[in-house]
Amino acid sequence: MKVLIVDDTRLARQELKTLLKPHTDIVEIREANSVDSALAALAENFPDLLLLDIQMPGGSGFDLLEQLDQTPAVVFTTAYDHYAVKAFDANALDYLVKPIDPQRLTQALTRVRQRLQNQHTAPEPTPARLTAKSQVFIRDGDQCWFVALEDIDLIEAAGNYVQVSFRQQRAILNRSLNALEERLAPTLFYRANRSCLVNLQRIKNIEPWVNEGYLLTLRDGQQVEVSRRQARQLRSQLSL
Image 1 (spheres, rainbow, N blue to C red):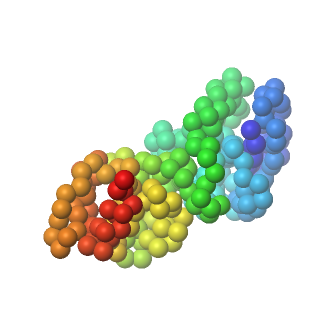
Image 2 (cartoon, one colour):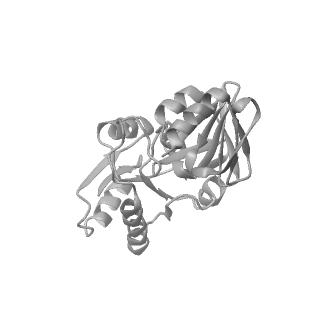
Image 3 (cartoon, rainbow, N blue to C red):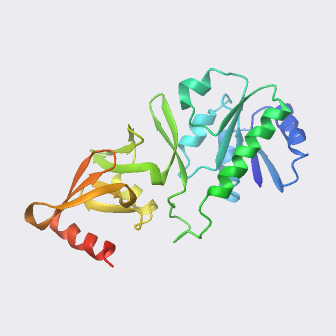
């Protein structure tokens, strides 16, 4: 397991390194003291686990996650317990309050190991593509979530933004539909029409529709029209 510790306090980073020493499956521990240095470290060598402080000069832990297209397993390490409920609503992998208890850290690492074991191990189609098991960070105002791509039902264009539907939730992101489509595996997300990307694994029912198109009903009950041109491509992609 490769670990990146992000904390602006040197003593806090040293304490975490000391607590991690007994865990022999950790083969690499790197440090960053700010959002900028963390982004550089992530670009250089992507870790399995991010031990992330929240309040730091020049940008918070939330600011860091918002800039990532893909996130490793994240365990927050902070002196402020109120962020857990307000920002993540129990979606974070774990949340450790300083001073960190060694037993709680061990429990968090156990969760990380389980996550890594369950992740898709096949190589991605290209380095830029995200797989169904890829974990992404979504932030809409004060609401934040960690979401696996396979749990996203639908991505819809909304002017210069997109609306992402997942787990009965909806979030608005400052991204374009075309930019997101380039990051998503075409075997998972399908361009149903000019304004919608549909998760093929979340389709519950397909029925004929007007102008030789289709009407898709998703597991969450949403319905999406597929244009005639895209219907031909969908048949070709899904047929035996």
